[in-house]
Length: 186
Image (cartoon, rainbow, N blue to C red; front, side):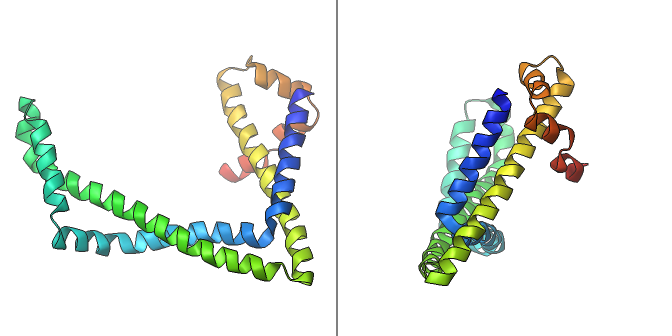
């Protein structure tokens, strides 16, 4: 019974958030995340090379690594070989994170503009209804993913209290036994 109430609460909250944000913001937000990842993955190599070739950041990081390794004899022997590669990896990671954040911020402006357009009378109703549908689908998927994780834990420990509560409930028991996410994962 408690698990069913939690499932209903998750679903209602997800639907409410979908309604509040609307399909346009949710859809563009999802696309913006994907676009930001693609931009970061596409541009990080050339920008990393630019940073390495035009600044001394990599040399400073490498020097710092070498200084830290002097206290350990084994590390002191290995450090020169890996310090440069490690400094490059640090720069790559920082460049990728910065690119992702810059792309995400730039795409927020696109989202804001699209939200202004979506507030027009006819589009607003479609936006809200679409947000409700999107929120419901997202809520159901979240519940199925959580139940999938619980099923893995349940295989390890079938006497788990949460697993037992799911078996006592109605909604959770049905969703647990017919988990669509589990079918997709297999």
